[in-house]
Image (spheres, rainbow, N blue to C red):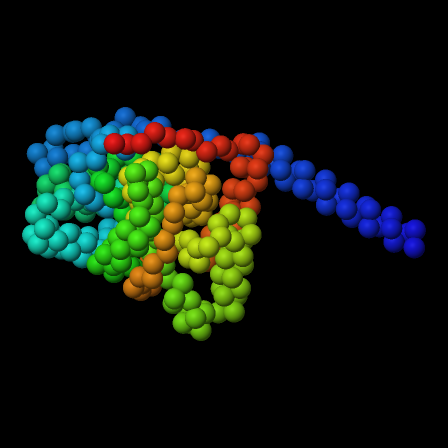
Length: 322
């Protein structure tokens, strides 16, 4: 019996030691919020080829809606999405002349002609409606979304994937979800597009291994970071301007798990969040590598919580934009 007790004590001590090591590693490897810009990232091109400075998210809004599109090597998939989005936005503006918008394409260090493709849309619709932010180096999807958001002019800010997997007209659904939250004088609210209603069908089409990875990721999200949101990863999220400022100013993770930290930050600030079912279709050409991307995201989830627990990361309070 004494021998068993000694083994149990040794295992407990080993587990405690391992936890301390993990906490130390999480703390020492934590990167701080990086809001620095290369000089080339401070400007956008106009149709005449002139450079003009991007505005700041701290400025009062001057558009009703900003659409931020992160794009990495998307010269082939992005035109379909842009055609659909801009057609919708132009029609909406014709029906409601007071409605104003901008589309910000953020080229995340692409090696193809993503910037050139986006600039063609800018020349067609003007830099007042379409702007291109070309990052000097690849930051990751989260970094690209943040840089675009910090450069936006919208009262509402929508992040939307370049592949067009979500039907763009479903912005009306996430807008309705945002209004139901009743942001109030604080103007803080987030409405997330969701594919949770499609999960049963997707499980039937996936391999057992990919289904295991999916449920494992969902568990880690729930256990370590975000509760009450079934689909944290859908790339169709609508923010009030002040909610975007509060969350993106504290964001550290710049790659695939950035959505989770973003919603974790929102819940820490007690920002109300709606989850709204949207139409979604899987588009070929995903940059997500099933096993390694899921593994990286799993590690990110664990470290997100540990780094906030140890104080390596802190929330950054921000003043209102208007």
